[in-house]
Length: 593
Ligand SMILES: [Zn+2]
Image 1 (cartoon, rainbow, N blue to C red):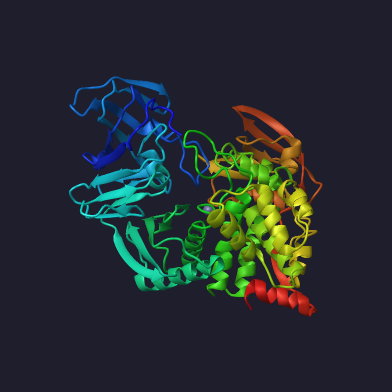
Image 2 (cartoon, rainbow, N blue to C red):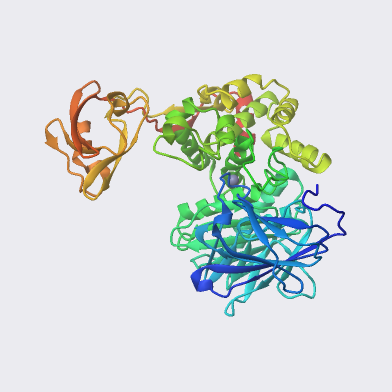
């Protein structure tokens, strides 16, 4: 659709020139050239969010010094229409130049960062689009800072033009982050695709080991979908002192890692899990996607109830892929699975917020947590991963281990991405899963997706002859139901657990705990578990009444509390020794025994 242009346009050309005159001050200089304009005005817009990260980030807040001129360099009038829209009065000029600077100093996988060592350009916060021309192609020419030698991006280079790249439309441009600097680049081939790894920030990684391990994950994932849609794929890895997180793109990803984390078993597996997660997204969410997630509206929130599939199932598969590729033993995999179970079961919000609602409200809740989030929300990652597991087990059981969630994912990919070339609706996903399982999933959706019924682990794991054991079940350990942290020698309540002693008795976040039952509580020790408070609570029993002196906003107050049991579970999965042949067949297929 063409909205801003009144007349018909013969393929306007849009090109960007990016340079870095003051990288040390964290700026990118952007110049945009638009040719073939036939309209009296054009509107340039900066996206408000980065797909994959469901929060309005207001990237226009980093823009300054906007200008516009004609091809003859005569200035053109600019009017700001709203927070992220600049209207240029073009007076019918065919060639227009617009420019602006972007301040880039936020380290994350979805925001741009520039300093003298490198520039990471997260495209939705760098490139403006011409309203109505989002489907037009664009070229990007990068003029690196003098000391920078390399550019890593999933964009195709323009032949014969140095440091110039091509995007067939703005969806592709916005899905192609760019790393400019002196990154350590290595390549390997996997699943017939050329993979490039661009390491920024140094680190104790072993390129050969990493290439082999990443290739194994890539082959394992490609095996599910039986096709890898890319010819080339780029991993941009940011190594920091304490890095993490990742963001998926069409033919690239940005990963955060800890510089010295590659030699420790746990942190290395964590990195491989992140690789598995983001790579799995090139199918699940980038191509096989909920209807609302592409083509995107860059101007506002894009709502979907299906992030429990797009993110949650990806989170289920990341560890499962590490199991299938033999990075985890079956026992270790079940242990890792218990981590998700722990998060969901120990979070009171799982009884309040259905996972479909958690997805829809990601913009205002998941990405904007507060002190009460654990009481009122559940993550569509953790619970979605468990629903992936449950659905997998249900399908394996219903088909006598002939089919599983893999078959649903592949069938959905083939039907909606390849054949129909569109996103799926929630009903379409359910229908496909039911078709493959050969059973109704009405209860699964009613109870687990749109409801908050407890997950009946032992029914589902039972299909594989496995049992979930809560080692803390029935324990009567007394608890206050708070977390507290130490600030300037004071012990301050940082969260209150729904239904616990503090919740019922009226202790609040930000209260300073001064004394309990006549004992002064000293907040100056290092670890909370060693504080006097914990010792006092541990020496009581459930049902005991205690008297807590607090300071709230500078006023002293005494609160009477009754100790409640600590309800946090500790979980393990154990095998049923008397499992039937059918159960063993499911277990074998699921855990690749
Ligand atoms: Zn993800």
